[in-house]
Length: 351
Ligand code: NAD
Ligand code: TYD
Image 1: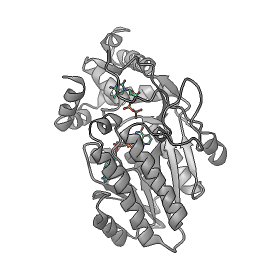
Image 2 (image 1 turned 180 degrees about the vertical axis):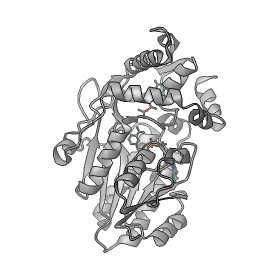
Image 3 (image 1 turned 60 degrees about the horizontal axis):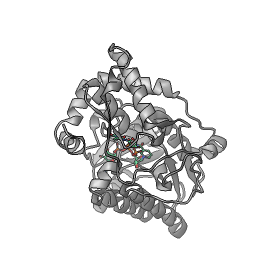
Image 4 (image 1 turned 45 degrees about the vertical axis):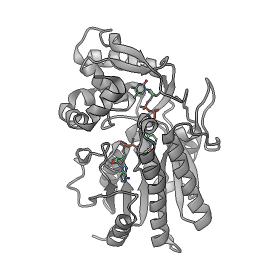
């Protein structure tokens, strides 16, 4: 079959990437979706079960820092577009070991940009879509929202590496006229998120009656977006976004960490048939994260106005679906949390 687009999705075996691939493969049979992923600890081909047999999907194991591997994919498939999600994505890991964050997020993005330029220069009809985070904007006080025009002020090695990659993407747009678009999204949640992140970590610990480690005073605030709503936003921006522009994406769904953890306790108690209030007793305030950003919140007015996007899944429903999914995923969780992750967890939180 002659595909109208051949889209290279990097990091497609991860949390957001796998949901995006599900959406693209099923919605656009006329596109070939090429998943390019190194399969780090965070990448899992189980996440692609829903599409692995589809004729318009293929997987290539590879590292975005490997220029020769990228070149080969462009040659073999005639890549027309890139949606770039591959990254080291966990703030705590970036604090312990920043090197791989610079290698993948900065140098890997640079390699990808360079290959796009090499293959696409002087041609129309291509797009480099860079998926980024609201963490590049730094931290907010009690009020205010991040806008597309907010100055960058990253404060963790993770956000510094993502900010750096955003700058490189814009530099390629201005310097080489590479057609790019960027989106900066708030915290995602939903099935298949690696259980080092707040929501799945808490659900997993509630399930196993382990302590629930809340950093510092628990008053840190995040805006949470259902992962499939992020995938829908990426689809819209990919097709209708203006080249050279940035779009902020948020859930309009701010929670203080402690309130969120308590809500998860209550939902899980209900789902597990435990008496109300049981799991809240597991909450344990632990040493704070160094440089912990106090509050993130997004003004997503631009994507709402210009592309008519808004979140579709209400927080209460999304949290319930997420809790239910993790409580039922014995095998997925076991395969993912054994081995190297167990060592990481014990180092971070004790056993
Ligand atoms: P994730 O950690 O679940 O997945 C990352 C994927 O990238 C994994 O499959 C991993 O194997 C792959 N990868 C890592 N290094 C690679 C390399 N060198 N070459 C090829 N593949 C590599 O991450 P996620 O939460 O799905 O995030 C995806 C993207 O979205 C990231 O760029 C992240 O910065 C951004 N983002 C995430 C969130 C969030 O809440 N999770 C919010 C906003 C933006
Ligand atoms: P996380 O899921 O790591 O996302 P990010 O740091 O990218 O926002 O953390 C979300 C919030 O939860 C953040 O304020 C840190 C906090 N947190 C805890 O309190 N305990 C934990 O065990 C984890 C992983 C995070």
